[in-house]
Image (cartoon, rainbow, N blue to C red; front, side):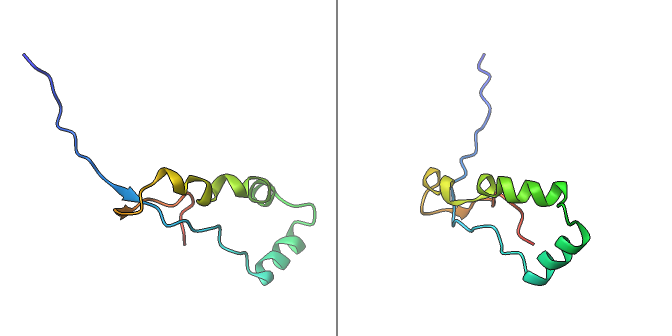
Length: 74
């Protein structure tokens, strides 16, 4: 008796996209509201490179459906 599951192969590619720039007015409001910064601001500032797509582009093929971005774009 064989117990083999059907495996679906999905090919994905990546089109690297950097983190979106923060609009200057948004940054000014954030600095005014949180002069010493906030946890969210500090995390983005310090961990921005972790969420960048470019270092991972080599792990994806050049053809196929686009892979999901590291950070939801919205």
